[in-house]
Length: 313
Length: 279
Image 1: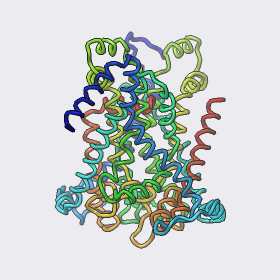
Image 2: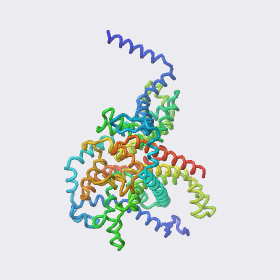
Image 3: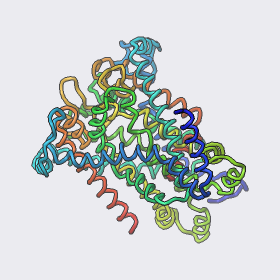
Image 4: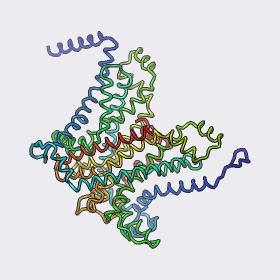
């Protein structure tokens, strides 16, 4: 009975489907393709985004019920000296990392573009670090920064008679020391993107300029850089977002069995590490969510600002 | 430029210097990797020795690290997770990209903008809600818990949509007239036409999941479920003085991606450029 009625249903279902017009069938197919993804984006992206904003207005330790506290978490952030230290560190990662890495990457790409001998091999050398795991490479660099007799850098310094440097143990040197492997790992990506951008510039421009006897420097300033602007905009935004979200290197280069990562004295701690510790060491979810809202706003402002500035020029 | 000979062997000193600097810089770039591999082959008594090449190369560090058992497990975890997430992305991102590129229906633009807008939200903002969700659903400390946030990405969807737009509609129409259903048209006609984009997406997704750190660190607590980067971190913090073992672990985490790169170099660089510029 049951089986036969469902068979009837199925048959009428097919009949219903074949009765639809071409357009209606298309619409039905489209939504059946999108059903699972739309559900996914709703549950795993949109709902959590709203929830993050909601949690940022609560006081919540995961065990008891969250209690609404309004903007108290944000007020607490503004009065927290650690937050300002972390905010400054994050800004430093961005302000040092982006210009240094882009300048290096452009210089390398510009010259590598003209190289014919071993072109592919040299490009591979620059690109290889991009394929490494940040957590693993952080330990290699951490080893380099050790004091003598272990650390490579201090051994080299000793070899040429320069005083030993504390690197990761110093409050002033540790941030650049952590930044170096991040720049190193991202450079290869920027180089290949710059080279693709350089290749996309029509050679006729260069030929015309050369016939007119324009110098190399002028060609670079008047032709190459302006035509490369879309590539530059993309890389500036992309790498800025990367440096603002730095985490893996810091966590791995500064973690100790005895103390929390981000040291010494919060000298290397970026915003994402503060978020991680507030949420998953202190379980202060509301306060951590407020920090993520700040991260979101910073990323938004920096991206929009750069897009605007670089588009206008 | 006094080009006397026809094929103009223009050996300018400036270009030679530039080449040498580039080459030297390239060698400098791989120095950390070279030291990592060299040290992984050194005996523990040799690591204070500054010589680059091990005096008595030995695989004993690899034996020590791998016979521990944990490393093999972490390696397998990372590999399995990266493969599963990559397959999911390749399937769903292309299905959605195809639908948005090739179907006419009300709400298409809205779905596209909605998916694209998720790119503005940094994942670090979502880890707290994801953690709460995983806790409520019992997904904490499980493979599914590590994988679920990355099963589809807006980046991949956007990339695939761009490429499906270049597929001529005539091909799809012809298949429709032949009586293929819409899924078969997607799967058998459209998908094979965008294989360069598919491989670019696969490379990017695999790489980012193989190296992923913060979310697996948050969601796992039992050591058997660690991914390789998280496992390596816990191992390294434990054995901080045994640098040769840490370097061996780091080398194991790096070897697979480097090997694949050396085999498929041109393909991978092209894929990364494609993904970077179109995505």
